[in-house]
Image 1 (tube, rainbow, N blue to C red):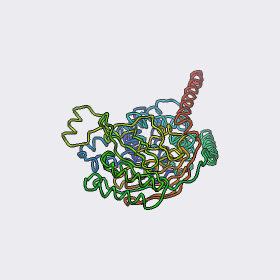
Image 2 (cartoon, one colour):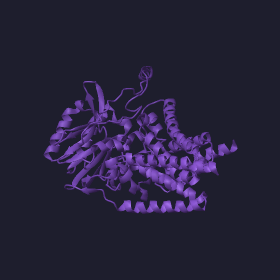
Image 3 (cartoon, rainbow, N blue to C red):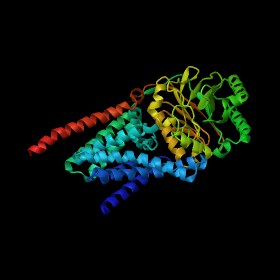
Image 4 (cartoon, rainbow, N blue to C red):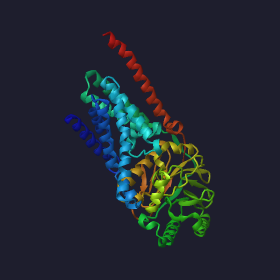
Length: 498
């Protein structure tokens, strides 16, 4: 019992430290060490004990890396402390359950330690991360690969996406453990594996999958910096409209982007204002895309939308909604109780999965709203037609926490996976221009009204990730599973004969 408690506490401590590998800290080498520690702690355990160690590792990761959920639900969402804690702890437990199942599965398979550490663990870890990214609406935040955006393994993102980066990260963690704890032959094999990965990574770093197309564009990303507690105050509407209009036309840009719901009103309620901005944009030969709420009159429900002002008037409606933020998966009696407590309870209407990219002259933009950019595969329907990625967000919901930095890191991964510029306009920060290499070209200061301007180059072409999506890394995982099963079938009869 003492040994079990020590193992669980050690796993929890390792999990507490893992968010340091992500933004804003960026200690990405720490991920290899902490994953190696987790693998070591689960070695030799029963599946049940391995599950507990995986659970506490995962719970600690999200408790320290996603503590800002409480800020969003309670401080700005208005939920009572007890409700906020229940939702927050429930999410942590659900996320930890994936790690628990993964660790239990790894402990259930009888293999040579080096094979289990270097092959089975990467396969299972990646597979369960992928499941976590879409089951029950999905929560892909703190996917391991995001933490490697500033490291050499980021070169794998255009090939196999963020899950491919996760796979290689866990593989190297297993190889590291083998070098420390394996036998002589296993250490030689692990050294060879590391050498192959390093060589392949160097080759991947030299690869270019997309190419410039068309002329460079002058862009402006407008950050209004309206605090969440003031944004929806009726007396704040007019100053907000004046602020965005003044900042927009302070200088010329071919493309201007405002944040998510930059205008705190329904589009139908501010038609006169929108018409005046559109007329001025056409006169200045500018195209504006802004976040605003629209109304679906047939269903009498709101949509979280991006609308165009200027030459193009196309719209995009948010597809992937936030549970307990934009829709409430609860029975009617719970919704009635929420209404009686004056808590948010009205569902937003999701946009169609079949929407076209937004036009910009002869170019096309791939739009996402808020944390939609965390679902990389869902953007692939816009590609390869789209030349530029845009994301409008309102990270004011998370206050002055690490969430905005983590969200920026996610956006950087999307740019790197697709080989295109990402333009990220947010309400309070972090507004940024991100290159096709996933590097921050320019960023605005947080919590300050600001216009971030710059010149970008549209791109065209197909990265392997855009072509195959997550199926490439999933196919590799499946092939390895088949190989592991085949190896066990071959080795078991030999063991019986001996």
